[in-house]
Amino acid sequence: MKWTSYIADGRASYGFLDGEEIVDAGAVLSDRHPDLKSLIEVGSLIEAAYEAKNAARIALADAQLLPVIPNPGKIFCVGHNYESHRQETGRDKTEFPSIFTRFADSQIGHGSPLILPKVSTMFDFEGELAIVIGEGGRAISEGDALSHVAGYACYNDASVRDWQWHTRQFTPGKNFPGTGAFGPWLVTADEIPDPTTLSVTTRVNGETLQSQPTSDMIFPIPTIIAYVSAFTPLSPGDVIATGTPGGVGAKRQPPRWLMAGDVVEIDITGVGLLVNKVENEGL
Image (cartoon, rainbow, N blue to C red; front, side, top):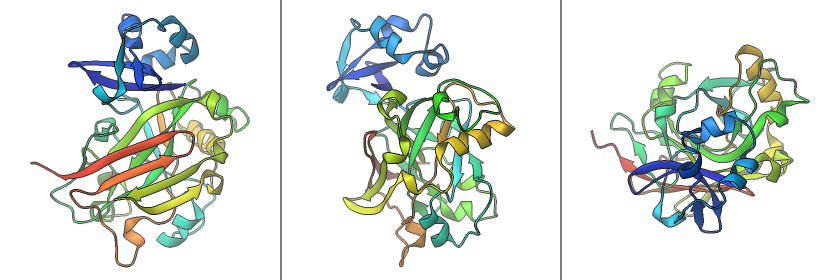
């Protein structure tokens, strides 16, 4: 099942897909659950879909898609989590995953523009598989970790490299407005019982620049969940972007920086196709 957050006719809502239509579950459930995150907090998306099955429908093409979870409490990103990317960046092997954070207001949905900041000449793509936490918890074991996942989505952790490289701290380069593309929808975990069987592909203007199976992650999803939940409680709706494969623009010869007009596609088997066009910042 696929769930998405969107705006239609000037109203923000959420719903699940039925073919090329969105069933407007928010119209039925919003008095109790005003957004998709709050719906995830109370349990089964499958049960919620049954309750809202007769709600009004809108064409998917008529909706402005928002980030899957527009208001996550926490967004964690994993750095250098594919060996190909670790090698191209020259990073040392580590015993623990590299974790940094992104702010919710840096995110955009499928179809919205990726914003090239005026202060940057080094804007880069990073296709990733994102997980959304369903059941929260602290000190979650690796053996139980996948049972805490509500579902999966595509993510483009687009990076403002010149600002990322000001110091060894990633925060500035990962939090410019309009740089975290997240969508187009959440595929519920029951449809992806084994997330190691997927493949992450990034295309720019139709050219494949990244392509790697998720089985090549250095730290697999259960390890990431266990590690993050060891130092902070995870809550329903929290997001973890699990890292990007090798092939980023910064490490190509010559570098391949994103420019206004470029179309970036993040394509993950069984999950979806996230598409965003690059625009210059209008400030």
